[in-house]
Image 1 (cartoon, chains in turn purple, orange):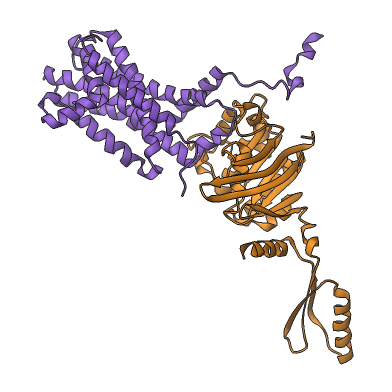
Image 2 (cartoon, chains in turn green, red; image 1 turned 120 degrees about the vertical axis):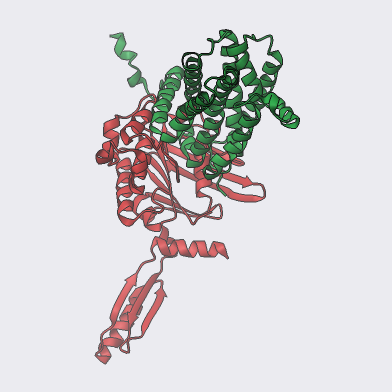
Length: 266
Length: 286
């Protein structure tokens, strides 16, 4: 009976293998989804609020096609930023300061599988939002269906990578959870106002346009707008892609370099 | 490292800049033993334990935990240790059962979820969200999450700090049940009674150095003095320390009998761990 000899339980601890990476990441992802829906504040800011914005601004500009063509991709860009940048900065600050990160760090769970689960949760929220906004734009507000699906996909993916890494990087600068909303919104609110979420940024004063030009959100919205409204592909928005890519590189470097599992006490 | 040794620490040092948090300590924890690191706040207990857990890097010295160097945090080691941190957060929106069940999936050969919940005394709270738990119940969940991987070695960093007496007793019972399961336990505490009640051996640590080490009952024997206290006929309290209380007692009781008086409130006490602890830590402070 050779099976008995190979019984892994009998062979431990020498042959104690580890939990497969994909199982660990998948379990973490499912857990994050479950907790997301149980957390009223996370569900509101990441799911309800962008849709409320869309409904309100859509109602205000109901018959003005030009304005709707600014608002719908603008809100899509806002959703990408709020579901990744804001959500991750807040979430990781809480997890770090409350000691959840450190507790997890003491288990066999691979760091990469844990972060994949957290990122997967944020990406799911982004995908849900962009999908709902795209559908609402066509079905409710009468815009055309997106002209460039591939460009839409690429910009959403790059936007997620960019704002997710910047959100993780920002969490390193936040000293405690009480101040997290202030830090996050001190960045988020000015950026969405100058980047043309709610109006055509060509109407803004020049110095604000230059600032917006240097930041990633305007380029994400331009890319989304090109793909959804005006039919511009990746080539047309190549400079915007480059700016997004540069911010992504910066975000990833800062996110990795400053990462701390431990709360900042004292 | 012999097979019956769980932790071996040799000349461990940890500096933070010019501050020497741990100044060359050595100790050995045998398998199946509850070993207590006893000392005041800031003595270097947590620094030491977190180096053994793999959370901090050491400046100098040799450390082996279950035969492995915890520095690079090998998965094989994390599979076999359980950690109760001084304070650590929980997923607020999960129930106790969901949290224990999720944690069981992090380990290759976990304990049974329901059995671990029962062992930690959380049956009644299994369906409660973790944010609604009392401080004592949260600590039980800390124990449950540290035990679910069926570790050979459990680290408990000040497991009862801030507890009311009833919750402390319950936590003590849980630690004793760990010992009954054959686990090795490294416990830090600044409570003397806790070290006395739980630890097989204690190392007293202060300013990053070990001042004394041994079973709690024998730590006093290094300075074997007796404290004799009594009250005379006028009600005045006396106290005297002596190496041998026999002649003193003879003299006291003899004199009292001669005068037809009683020696009131007479007590003869051996130095407790507390006396040794206070004496040692006071000397070190000077």
